[in-house]
Length: 151
Image (cartoon, rainbow, N blue to C red):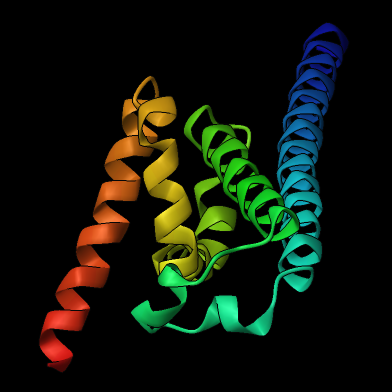
């Protein structure tokens, strides 16, 4: 009888230990995903602050204005940061729930004429990343659709 009690206690200890390890790994993965997201979010926000306010106007007028090299560099860094963040999401390093928090803002940013003009220059570079290319095309089409509804 004592032997059965000891076996159940050992089994219980193993089960509780396994659950604790699973919970710790799960929590660590969520924390890591949140940390990655926050760092990229801060990086993108810092770069956005370096751009002129006129770059965030939704009118097509700005796409015809010449950008300074610093503005183009900041726009390219933002686009590459979004690309890296997207790839982290695709490969599971960034949980889908965390991505959904910022996705509408990222889509709105990439839909601006300032960024659409720069994205057009990157089309051939992103062709090797078909998921990103499809997502960017979807962003472009949804923006075009929303513009057609407002006219």
